Length: 142
Image (cartoon, rainbow, N blue to C red; front, side, top):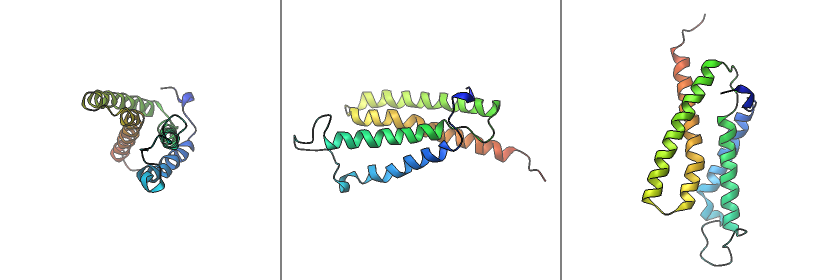
């Protein structure tokens, strides 16, 4: 994976901030008045529920995207290979969950949300875990 296509290092923190700010908003959407509407007034593409869903989903996905594809402080061939392996595992998991979701449910909204969020979350977790394990296995200097 070419490092010229990665975001600057500081974008990781911006991405985490975008994601973490929207998690409680999504969790407490009912209390905020953005739960799925029952009446006809909130339906449609410009309804409050749809705008809320699109804004939170896109901003969470953008945050995860920035966090996942930001450069490391030291970007070398080994980091690039770890990034590529983690991305491959994330795509595998995404398709398994997508197939299971398509077979077991008709709720396309949750399938869309999972298809956007799960690969990025799994990629970040696996990539960070492999780097953590790699750093633990390196001999200490000094």
